[in-house]
Image 1 (cartoon, rainbow, N blue to C red):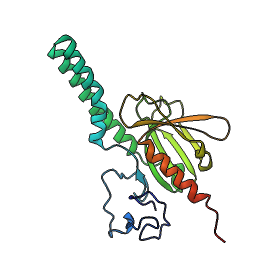
Image 2 (cartoon, helix red, strand yellow):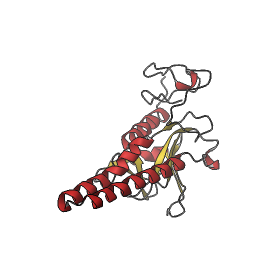
Image 3 (cartoon, helix red, strand yellow):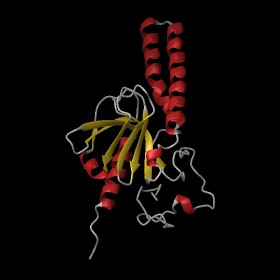
Image 4 (tube, rainbow, N blue to C red):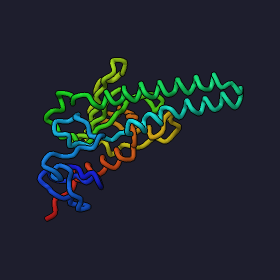
Length: 219
């Protein structure tokens, strides 16, 4: 069970987090009060969704269009063209946010049913100028990407947790805020790039999971 306060991975029977002492979500109530961002993507609703909220996503997707609309108005003074750009931006933001929410609301792939899913979130394997095409899962034994887009070149990828040691966040311009690239190899000289929301959380969780898995037993 992962602590929602500090992201420490606790044994499933724990009542309180071993790291920060916070009460773990699965014992707070007889029926857990699941956050609106924790969707029924896993069997027990206990995994962490790493994603921007719906309204935050709409804002992220709208901002480029709003900037374009402002530039149009400043350079041409034409309100109609500017409002048209705003309208297109709002329509695009509503549509793509709904599309992303549908992606992360998908039932977990059958191949992951017996796996421990720690976290998941929208992702693609293209670049930061493309929108989510699938879901990246952080499992107890590594990363698993599943595409729900028939146009995606890669339908699924599994990378063992030991190889996430090579993960690095790639800095650079992004079309949308909080949309970052993480690059790593799979141990066979093949590099993969995952574009995810809030890459810092992914990097932290992978580090915590590696340290927990490879921790040497004390004598």
